[in-house]
Length: 145
Image 1 (cartoon, one colour):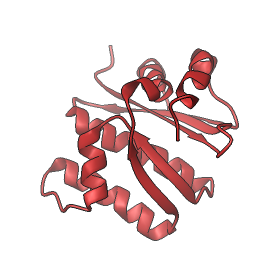
Image 2 (cartoon, helix red, strand yellow; image 1 turned 135 degrees about the horizontal axis):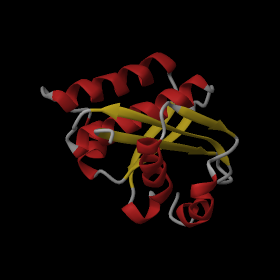
Image 3 (cartoon, one colour; image 1 turned 135 degrees about the vertical axis):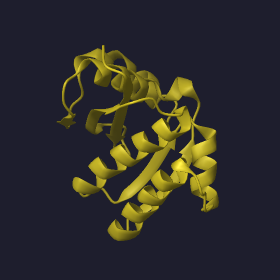
Image 4 (cartoon, one colour; image 1 turned 120 degrees about the vertical axis):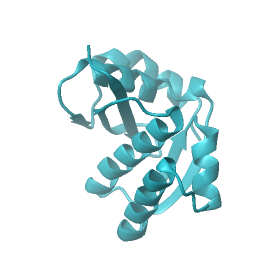
């Protein structure tokens, strides 16, 4: 059995159409807030690689969203990941905002993260998503901005 955390990310356009989804796996045990920050970095990296520049980054981890919005310097393990997030945003110069959402509005990302635990490699779907999250796409869109 793999020991680690799954990462899941989904990108939608302003009409709530799925532009991209992806999964990855990180070996080892991580603090939940660090895992969420790494998932944000993973999703952000995918979005920037695809040229998406007007981003609303949603997470159900209030702690991470608050740290990112406050632009607080954090001298701990999570601070390293937050710095990576800020650096990719600085270099790619997108328009972005960080928004806290309820877990009930983040079901697709959590289901993708669970899928990542069962997969061998990083997977990215362009203009698509794996069938296991199809029924959750509309549920999540009801909670989006």
